[in-house]
Image (cartoon, rainbow, N blue to C red; front, side, top):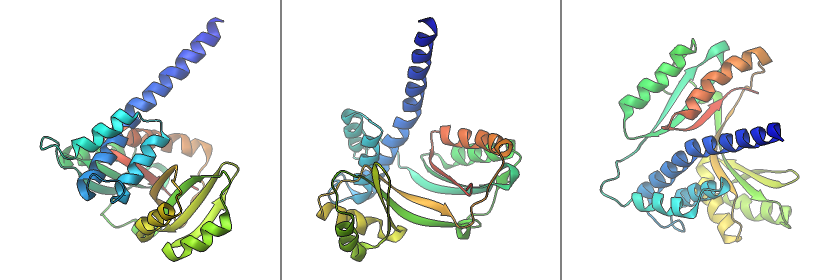
Length: 235
């Protein structure tokens, strides 16, 4: 009884800890998207995607609405989206995407994480050719006709469809993100979540011992309030 209670409490605390770090990031993504492209998700595909991703993580509607409203407030600071590239322990390649209202603070923090892990930042653009950017959309499987989606979306930039037990995953070039989103909307299909993801062109296998060390810098990066996404060349 006592152990079961402690386990449930620990699991609950872990969930709350995750939400306390994740919700602010999701809110920031919504605010940035609304500032960039307007407050109407029907006209702003970036905002629609940010809202979808927030809902996928069970973020309350009030939080989502507040994040959208903040974009129109004069008191809300402007966010700058900045990408950092670096090499971590055991030569792992890492690309970090951030949204910040203080570039100096964010740069210092990211640099510190790399330096303390015996790694370091590299010149912007140095790792771009080592990754390929893709638009990725996740749909609930339900009773969707895969062939129909493929035929319809190919003119919108679809490159590949993968299906697992629960989801349909759509891939396209990163420049087709808005077009694919528009095509899905025309088919009355709402993605669970979507992302502009970076895939390593030459994935590398690391040992368990190496991964344990690499995970430490990845955890620090992902916990940073200004970091939105972290991509690596881990296989």
